[in-house]
Length: 92
Image (cartoon, rainbow, N blue to C red; front, side, top):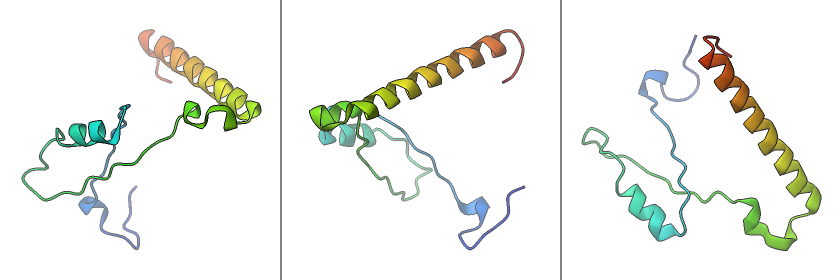
C-alpha cells in the first residue's frame, strides 16, 4: 500500500536514474542530451559523479579495498544464485 505523505501525491511523483561509466563530464553531458523527451514536458536532469575505489589511489586504506572486494564477491554470488533459481523455474 502506498499512501501520501507530507510530499507531493504519489501519483504525481515520477523518478528514476541511470548510471553511466564515462571518462569525463563532457561525455556525461553528451549522454544526457540523448535522454528521451519526457512527453514534451520540461524536466530536470541532474548529473552527479559517483566515485570508484580507484579514484582514491594510494589514499584508500587496504581494509576498505578488502571490504569492497568482499562485497563485490558476495553480490556476484547472489546474482549467480538468483540466475540459477530463476532459470530452474523458481523465484528468489
